[in-house]
Image (tube, one colour):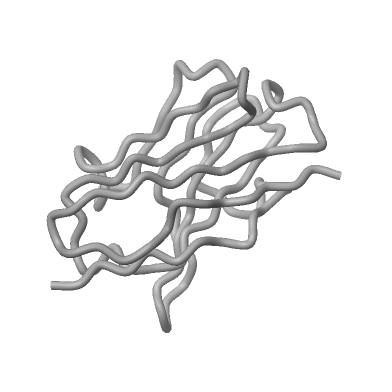
Length: 124
């Protein structure tokens, strides 16, 4: 059974930075494309960023481009999200997800495995 566990959430002031990490266990990490999604209070869960198996392909939601960076460490079976220049509208629960798809995708139903989420709160 593949398990994903997020860490690194917390509270920060606008303009600050946080780094989220997601540890993946129970599967062959290098076979998965990985992504981060988020869900703000009262809103639908939305795509944030994704990275392909080979690390050559990445994709970002327009709202986070230039501020967030997704990366993976296959040796440690982790995927990270570096978040800079945070804004209050980045406040959400952030989830990591894994898919066996060979490409990056925004589509939530393509992701087979999900973490429990980590809270990020950005104050103005």
